[in-house]
Image (cartoon, rainbow, N blue to C red):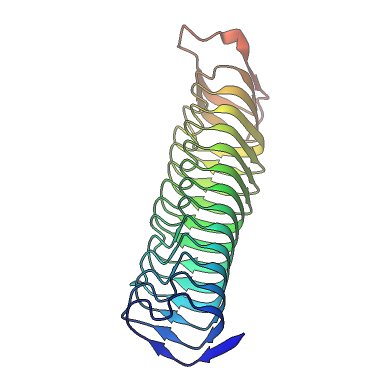
Length: 283
């Protein structure tokens, strides 16, 4: 593998179709698409200062590098990507990426990032921005700290561990999501989704968990959460804190120490299909 060290690249498509290179200590500036259609690259301690650095690329490893704010829409239509210890300042960084392992990454401006990606592993990621993870499929998340609304909208087959979400409208329109040992803060959690499971989670959500088909909560805290479970089907909820209020679940079982108010005012719902067990202990 040929090495390129301490170079400054300018101009559009500066290393177009580059392959089998180790690029170190270099800067890409003032030119779009510098590594378009590249393959088999190892990128270490590089700075990307302009648009579209890695499009249609394959077998790319990036470490100890920075995508500056102007490196907008940086990595699209790329496959077999590994990134570790990278600072991403730009928006819309990942689109249509297949098979990616992203670890120890800070995304300070992650609006509309990670869209239509599949087969992705996220490990120790900090991200700030709305619409993170839209329409993704087959994603495993560990230690994600996310601040921004509408996370993972429309995504499928998502597994989350040890993460913190400060986001309203998270996990809308999703299919097959499991969240373990995590904190979720924000309004309207997981509406219009199906096959959603939370395990050992701490949740604060105004009108959260409504319009869900097949909803499971195992050993979860629901704090400052009202009007929960509206029009949910196949609910299996084991909650360890007081729920402020529950409204019109369609069927299933809800267990909680206490519930401030149970509202069953839709005459078309069969009240015998939902079982609410209140243990009447202090939450």
